Amino acid sequence: MLTVRGLTRSFGAVRVVDAVDLDVAEGSVLGIVGPNGAGKTTLLNLLDGVLRADAGRIELGGQDVTSASAAARCRAGMGRTYQTPRPFSGMTVFENVLVGAVHGARRRGGDAQRAAYESLERTALAAQANTLAGDLRLLDRKRLELARALACRPRVLLLDEIGGGLTDAELPELIGVVREVRAAGTAVVWIEHIVHALAEVVDRMLCLASGAVLAVGTPGAVLADPTVREVYLGSQVEGWER
Image (cartoon, rainbow, N blue to C red; front, side):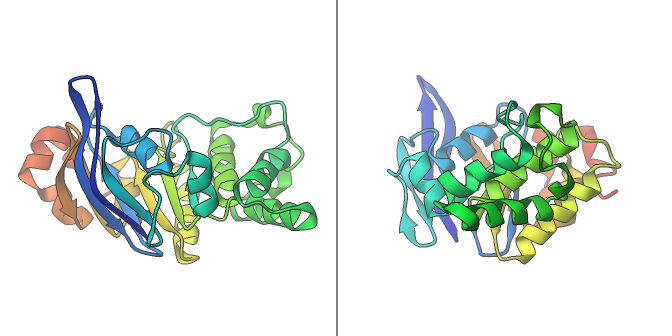
């Protein structure tokens, strides 16, 4: 569903993403980990078209989207959430998600409204459809990010630290939604520092360091890699399985 080859981006003399290759199949989840400054969010910005790559190729469902705009990639089936939720605070929850259905999926009228409501149901937000987005607590703002992205009918969903700031009691609800998204056939690329949350969901894990792929494989293999432990996990590795 998503194929990336040699993706590269520099800012001045600093190469932030360095010849990254990755593949994500339909209905699979790729987790991305790495230390702060590893280039993880820049990688997502290259995938969804917010930034243009200096080199490399991006294919979405076999279609070359390397030169496509962010809007075109969204309409081709790439959805995105942000580390810090970005709702239209003065609009209701329903109106926020309707924006995704209309402008992301190009639905109209009753079809767009049904798509928005279905996304709210999938993310357990239907009861708050008429609540102003600016009044939501953090967990519900994270859900709204997901709902709005899902209303765009993504074939590939990019998640940027969507678990950040949530409590241990709130994380299982979010993990459940990601599992449902995967079960529906959507491919997911998920950046997350909460390693045990990723390990519960992902099929494969990729570790970035200084913009380059340090290791890729099953979660167990990547987290057991001595170089990954040294560069990223350090003392955190104990208890990642909890």
